Each structure stands twice: as C-alpha cells, then as structure tokens.
Amino acid sequence: MVWFKRDLRMEDHQPLLRASESGLVLPLYIIEPELWNQADTSARQWCFIRECLQELQQALSAVGQPLVVRVGEALPVLQALHRQRGIAQLWSHEETGNGFTYARDRSVRRWLRQQGIPRQELQTFGVIRRLGDRNGWAPAWERQMALPCHPAPVSLMPLTGMECGGIPSADDLGLKADPCPDRQPGGRRAALALIDSFLTGRGHNYAKELSSPLTAFRSCSRLSAHLALGTVSMREVLQTARARKGSKAFIERLHWHCHFIQKLESQPSLERMNAHRAYDGMRQSDLERLTAWAEGRTGWPFVDACMRALRHTGWINFRMRAMLMAVASYHLWLHWRDSGEVLARRFVDYEPGIHWNQCQMQSGTTGINTVRIYNPIKQGQDHDPNGVFIRQWLPELANVPLVHLHTPWTMTEREQQQACCVLGQDYPKPLVDHLEAARQARDRVWAVRQGDAYRKEADAIQKQHGSRRRSNGRRSSPSRRRKESPGQLMLDLG
Image 1 (cartoon, rainbow, N blue to C red):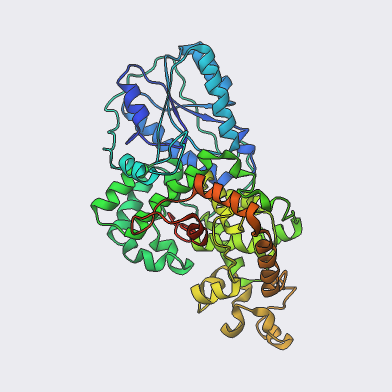
Image 2: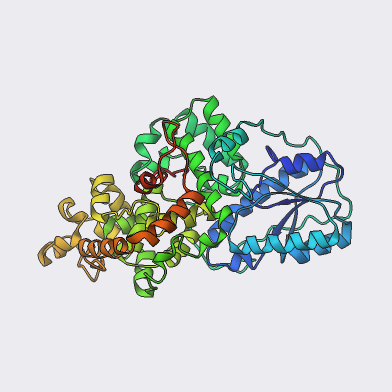
C-alpha cells in the first residue's frame, strides 16, 4: 500500500517507485472528514486538492492501477483494507502537517506495530525527522536536493475487485461555502506550466517585483500551493531552476521553505504555543476586531485591499501576508492563533510548518527575530503609490482623490460627499489610530524582552531552531543572530 498525503504526483515519488518494485500496489488517498472540520481548513483548499486527485487518479489509471479513494477516519479505513486485501507493507512520505495529522499518524503507527506490518516513511522536502541539532542542516538539505529525481513507475498491476471510489465535492463533504473565484487550478500539469512560464519569462524580474501586489501576482512563481500538496517535488523545482539559471532569490526561498517546516517538525507545539513563553497571556481574543480585519473593514485601505484580494484569489504575496499578520498582531493586538486561523483558511497554499512559524515571527513571539511593526499606510504608499491596487479591490474608494486615497479619514465632510464615500457609511473609519497603536504595541513587546531569564530562553530557541546559514558561509553568534531576522521577508514561494 502507498498512502498519498501531501505528495500528489507519480514523478519523484520514491515510496511509489519502490513499492512498485516489490509487487502489487494499492495507491490510496484517505479523505478524513474530521480533518476538514479543523479550524485551519477550507473548501477552497479542498477544491484545489480535488483537482490534484482527479489528475493523479487518471495518471495512475494510465499505468494500470487507479488511485483508490476512501472517505473516513484513517485508522478504520486502513483496518478495513487490511481485512479485505491484507497489507504486506505500508509506504508513504513523511508528513509535517497540523496537530490533527500528527496525532493520526501516531495512532496509525501504533496499529501497524501491533499488526506487525512493516512501515516505510521516506523523507520529503529537506525536512529531517528526529533532528537533534541544526548544525549541518543546510549541507544536509543540499545533499537531499542533489539526489536524482525518481522516475514514475512504468506500469502497475491492476487490483481485481477493488472499487476506486469517487472524489467528493466540497458540498458532498459538507464544507462551508467559500467562494474563491480566481483560485489557482490544481494538478501537476498546471504546476509544470507554472514552472515553465516562470523560468522563461514571468520570473525575470522576480527579485524586484515580488514585494508589490501590483506585480507579484504575475512575477512570483505561484508554485506554493503545488509544493504544499506535492504535485511537484521540491527537488524537481530546485534542479529545474538551477539548470535553467533561475532567479537566485527564488532558489534561496526554496531553502527557507524547508527551514521553517523543520521548526514545526522538531517542535509540533509551535502550532499553538508561543515559541518564547514570556509572551504567554500577552494578547487576548477580540471577535469584533478580528471580524473587521478578516472582512477587509479595518479602515486602512491598503490592508483591506490585500485582505479582499486574498479572499477572492486564495493567494497574496509574502510581504503582504507579513503586513496583514503584523497589523492584526500589533495594531489590533489580536492573538496570532486567532488571526492565523483566518489566514490559514484563506490560503489555498496553506503549509502548516511555514504558516504557524511565520505567524509567530510576524507577531514577535519567537524571541529571536526582529520585532517588525509595519506601518499600514506607508506600505500602501510604497507598494501601491498610485492606488491602482486599492481601487481595484475597494470600489467604494474609486472616486477618492489620490491625495486622500491611502488616508481617507483626512477628507473633509464636503470632500467625502464629492467622492461618494462617506466614512462610517460607505467605508469604515480606522479601527484605531495606527501610530498610537503601534507605539503601545512596541512598548508592550519590548517590555517583555528584558532580563537574563528572557535571554536564556531565547538562546535555547536559537540553538534549536535558528538558521546556521549566512551568505559568507560563516556562523554568527547567538547575540548577533537575535538582531537578525533571516527569512522574515524572504519566504515568498508564491
């Protein structure tokens, strides 16, 4: 049995290839309703996965044995298939998922041991299971990425009497309505087309154009969802990018992709607990502010435009993700878990290892990264100076003069009437004064970052999770590393 999870491809799929060399193969995907009831999942994500599964099922069918799809809890599904066919060996890639999949995998491993069924979980990405120390991690990542890509099996023997099973829609699974009109299509063919168009044209100005939402939708690779669901492997993308002399900035981000997932692999509690426990209890929930932020009604036009674009497309570039999270955490003083769940559901490319570590980084709770409080007005003026993006996503501001577009509250009542945009009626007033909120947040966060006890815990976090890479190849001291923020604005696989 080959259990597909977040590796929805045949190419460079070592478990599938090795299993096919051993005899009959049952390729399996389990749709777990309880997983899709978690707070970090959404219908838009399932729709993308469904398209990936449909293509994978066709590809496997073409070589002899279609993908077998089952709906239910993983362990009962495996037990039923074992009774029906007898599982000689279970193959899969290692998965660094959310808390639900972590608990599910532990339960399955216990059952396999009890049944005496051999289990082969092979490494995916550059993430290392049971990693003891970050020293040497970067060279290990390079060695893993340099290995040859595994070919897809040429043929699979068909399994007689085995129903393939249908792939349900979001409605069939009872998922909450989640309109996402401009969502990316799923499937390996779409991923390969993106790689080609990125390396042959779209990505030529990647380093210069990845920060602004005006240019990022085209100039970023847009491979993040495909890497998260594994329609292509990290090794395939990296080797192709290097062979075709792709952007060095893009290649660097592939490294950071695994760097962040490694953190969650090594410490699963980072999904829910502050990395540095000195921040426990510092922020509280505020449903009114959270809802306004989630719906793009903060009163800060650039922030609201980014949120509405994300809601419509399922994607936004990394700098804007960082800004959205920072505004929620600092200006609105929301707990990163509350705002993080909203963003997780909105991101078609949701990758737990990256997402939750970035939520903590942008909220200042890691203890080892620079506290970065984005000015939501300056970000708009820098990355949308003519207001093109704002007007696209906030039609209620279409007639507001550019001089007031980033700060509509500076209009007089007469100017509001002339622009057909009355604050508090057509567009909300700012939830808070952004400058005063930023000042208070900075004081609160830095008040915690004092004393020997704080520094001792920060050093322990740095030792476990901090990057050992620097551009000159040397390692930096712990005190210097706390002043740096590797990857804070560099993780843009989108």
